[in-house]
Structures are given as structure tokens and as C-alpha cells.
Length: 79
Image 1 (cartoon, helix red, strand yellow):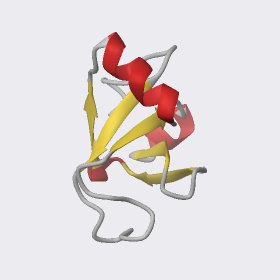
Image 2 (image 1 turned 180 degrees about the vertical axis):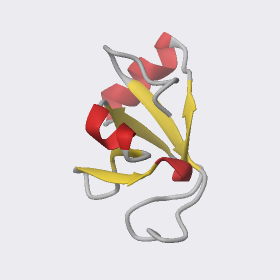
Image 3 (image 1 turned 45 degrees about the horizontal axis):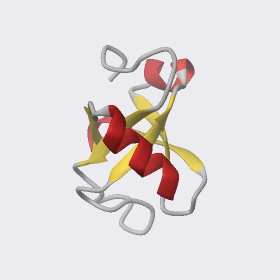
């Protein structure tokens, strides 16, 4: 995932596998990605999950997505 993450701004991922985290993650849901270089070294990503807090998950559970600015702003307004 580190090749797709950026150094500033807001970035998002879609959950593609929640089999080990069915309470914390919803499959096909968009999550905000929090930059965490240490986590990336361990093939993990930090996202804001269903609890509203940020936690580490395996990077393999997500796919990075690019959103238009309008969609990004709409998501951030309701978050």
C-alpha cells in the first residue's frame, strides 16, 4: 500500500476482506486512511474503523482508491 499512499491530505481505502474483523470493518465500505510509516513497514494500514477510532489492520484487507475532490469533500462532511 505504501506506493499508493501520499504524504499530505486525505486518502481513502475500500475494505475487500473483513473475515477476521466482522465487527470492526464492513466489506465494500470506504474508510479514511491515516498515514503511518511504521505500520506500512509491517504490511499494515491505519484506518478509522466502525468504532470511530483509528486502528491497524492488514493492508491486504483494503484497496486504495482515488476520489474526486467533490466526493472526498462529501465524505469528510458526513464523517
